[in-house]
Image (cartoon, rainbow, N blue to C red):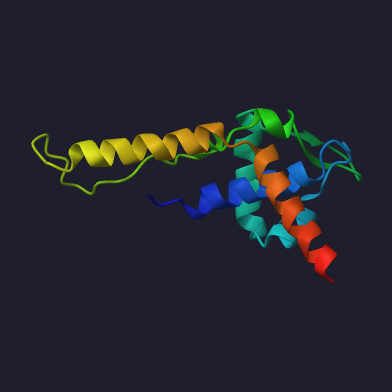
Length: 140
């Protein structure tokens, strides 16, 4: 399985917005870019695509920026990956002959990957980030 840079950047941008949910204070593109180390020239296009898909909303003006359009628990990684043009599952290469002994294994592995992506929400990822940060703060 291979995740494109575009898909990775989209997930990271959404994660940054999820980390600020439900404050509803729009995050500016520059803040998202610097916090998630996403090149600005890609982020602009990614946010436009995420807005068209209904994952984010934009606020115009001096204090404008982006917010999640819905709760992080309602955005599944599988939706994001598919919207950004990614394929869920395992790539078995170009040799997808029906008589391949491995075809059932590749299919089973692909189904398992899809299940993980389809059940994992932005809230789950946000909670993982918050758990790691709390553990680091606790140890200091």
